[in-house]
Length: 171
Image 1 (tube, one colour):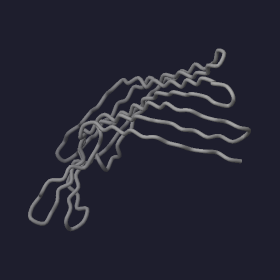
Image 2 (cartoon, helix red, strand yellow; image 1 turned 180 degrees about the vertical axis):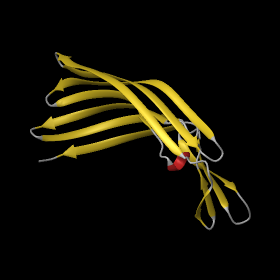
Image 3 (tube, one colour; image 1 turned 45 degrees about the horizontal axis):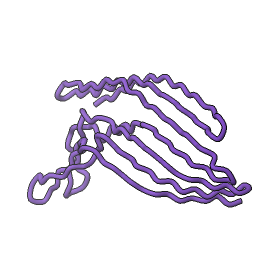
Image 4 (cartoon, helix red, strand yellow; image 1 turned 120 degrees about the horizontal axis):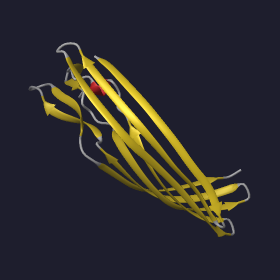
């Protein structure tokens, strides 16, 4: 098996502010070409994509060291060669593992909203976030025989995560 990835990207960013507002907007445009060549049996799996990856960060100064902030970003997670190898491999005596040469990358959209309090060099931050992942790569288990489990990596749909983070920096 031979894996080749070609990635070309162009990135632009604009930042500034006006009054209590501060902002940073970015856009990464990416061309992606992946080929997985298999010798036995002779086969080539190709994935070619052009994807935009926007990002935005906005902050509003509420005064007296308080600020409100919001952010959005889109990212890509590419899989490893191991998860793309389509041949069963004995993980241990009870498990076979097999990849998928046609796995798609995971696309992650992240939205954050939060508040921040600064006093001197110290900072307290509270941020809520929502993360959506498309084409999540998971292991799907099937029964190979009475004593062996067959584990296959596949794009298993979408996933969501919702959370709240609190952090502090004290000097």
